[in-house]
Length: 273
Picture (spheres, rainbow, N blue to C red):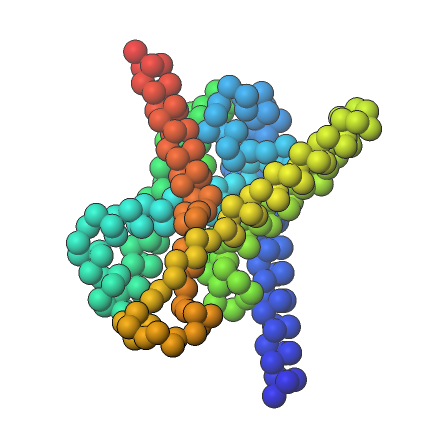
């Protein structure tokens, strides 16, 4: 029995590592028709590209969108579930079948966000594209859309056959991939005092994030029996732990994405005028 459990855990770890390796390799497979050397020239003036293109990743790859469309779709589905009665009923009363239907709708929304973001990136690339026509635009957009949906599929593989939540693990892997470059920047920043202050600030920031993320408000639950009983042991009182930060970082990601696209959209309208 113990041997079977160890083999199962080993298979999950191997599956997770393999999927993470695939996602990292996909980040360095360039999208077609884009001259990567000229791309760096428009990064600072194009906010939407800045969101997806980082210093440690010098290629606009097919997995550039990553898991972001799925995160936006999940947040939107949560909002819709709160305001649309049919979706709320589907989530609360239909059980497992309802949750599967919600997951299906979330995938459709993921595709929608992938289309919106890929088309926005395609139009942002226009200044460095030597050929600008429908074929070129469609190839770039389809490559990014396909990459985003593959990432969604890979994250579900981790969730089902790997360790932990697939989307969270992929996000963590992307963050850790940029850690060496961040440390290099810190240690090349100058004097020992500057390095020490950077490390101290980083430590305080991470500690504060963990403290807020894990903080709960303990609400005591008193039953009718406990209310009328004088001999009830107070140490056996039940509690409801209410997380202070229910949404985590998801609302920030969603808001930054929406604001970025509004900036790109208004800039596009201004050029038309």
